[in-house]
Every structure is written in C-alpha cells, then in structure tokens.
Amino acid sequence: MARTRLYRSGNLILEDFPAEDISEYVSDPSAMVWLDLCAPTPADFEMISEEFGLHALAVEDARHDHQRPKLDCYRTHSFLSAYAVTTDAGSGELSATEISVFITDNALITIHKDDSFDVEQVVARWDSNPDLAKHGVGFLVHGLLDVLVDGHFDAVQELDDRIEEVEDILFEDGSREIESVQRRSFELRKSLVKLRRVVLPMREVVNTLLRRDLHIVHEPLMPYFQDVYDHVLRATEWTESLRDMITSVMETNLTIQSNRMNLIMKKVTSWASIIAVPTAITGFYGQNVPYPGFNAEWGFVASTALMVVLSIGLYISFKRRDWI
Image 1 (tube, rainbow, N blue to C red):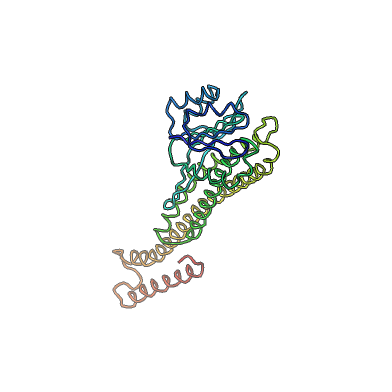
Image 2: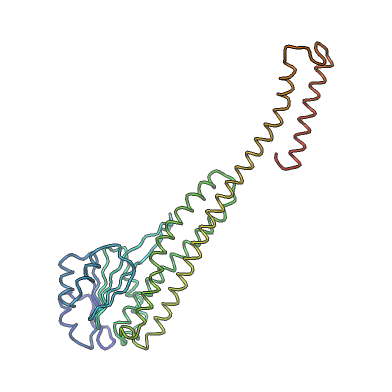
C-alpha cells in the first residue's frame, strides 16, 4: 500500500496519485513529493532506488529490521531511521514500530513494515501547518519527527504514571500487592530499557539535521526543529530519571522484603526462646534421680511457678525491645 502527496510552490496540488507517476514530478524543482510505503515488496525497493538514485547501503538498511535510530548522509540524499512507540492501555507494555526515511532535495520517502504506525497523524500535522510547506522538504521532515517525538513523550508519561502506581502499593503487606510490585517493576524496567534505546539516539539525529551544511532545514524552519530538539532532550532526561526511579523501587522492594524477613525471624526466635524455658525446666525435672521437691507437692508448684515467671519475664523483655 502506498500513500502519495505532491506539493508545488508550497501548495498541496495532488494526493494519492499512483507511485509510478513520481518520475514525472521529481524532476520539477518547484515540486515536493511524499511517498509512504507500508509493507513494501522487493519491487517497491527497486522502484524507489531507480527513481531517486538511492545508495545501496541505505536501501539495505531499510530492508532489514532493528536498525539503530540514526541519520546517514550520502551525496544526493540522507537516510533516517527512527521508531514510533505506543503503550498498551491494559498491560502498559511498550511496542515500537521502525520507520525508515529517505530525504532528498525535493522528496520524502517513508517506509514501515506494517500499519501499526498511524501515518494519518503525520498527515494531520502537515495539514495543521500548511504555511510551512513553502520551505521545502524540511517541512515534511519536521512534521514526521514532531509526531514521533510526541509519541515518545506520551510513552514516557504513561510509564511515569505506572511507576507511581507501583510506588503507591510498595509498602502494602498483602501477598498480592507484594507479587504485583515485583512483577510490574520487572515489566516496567523492560519497557524503560526498550524506550531508552529509542529515545536517546534521537538527540544525535535531530542535532545532525540542524547542521546547515546538509541544507535539509532552511532558516525559517530552524526554530521549529529547535523546538523538536528541546522535546527530545526533555524526553531523554525524563527517561533517565524514570530509569533511576524504577531502580529505586526495585531496591526498596528488596529492602522491605529483607526487613520483613528479619522481623519474622526475630519473632520466631523470641517465641522459641520463651518456649525453651519451660522445656528446659521440665526436662531437668524429668530425670530419673531425686531432685529438690522430689515426690513433694511444693516441688511441682515451685517448678510450675518458675516456668511461668521466667516465660513472662522473657515475654516482657522481648516486648519492650519490639521483638514480639
């Protein structure tokens, strides 16, 4: 499936025309073309390679998944790799969709493997700022990056909210809460690691796009790209702080569990000490030899009183020390 747009002199002239007609427009200096390929075939890659003169290494990167977010510059074009991220509303699991972008003097080609990336958001962003279209292909690049970075921000916000939910039940004593903290902390840590791999390299990508020698971003668009760069920095810093927060949550949870175990062991040991007193006394008086009070009523009373007094004394002593 392919989406196309044609701008001429900053105005949207044509939309959803056949991809085969691109060659009629790319040679026009006043024209600007956008081509979006969803789940492209080998024939699609051959077509764009021929029409736009793309470097073989850039096309190879677009064919293969799991590229690092980056911007590679070639003689006639640039290749941008980035990721759109979303979080599941129920589980909070983070999912990332890889976007490959070719940038030429008057064309933008976007490639993604499936329809999980909502390209309509990008189109809506372009349509909300039509006056910027006269500044060249940088206008298209800005709209795309703005949507991607906003998605990163939304994902960071969602993860932040979920970490706060975990913090709220961190000190609960219930077994279900303890298990929930452990499981959700692990899942959030995995999502943050994935998000960090996506967000951190974007700082270098946007910073490279701002280089004047690339001639991608014209002077009137500089403030807009600076704004995107600022959002990237904020998302990066926020992601790093969340990473520290979830690490702190996991360490605190381990400390709490250790303290609870120590408290249990302290109580068990205290009760064992109390029980050991009557056990020792009855064991001593159970010997088959005469002992003080042997065959006498006062001996039984004395041993019983001794057990009660010592047990109560140990209980009071442990209670004062908060061992019971």
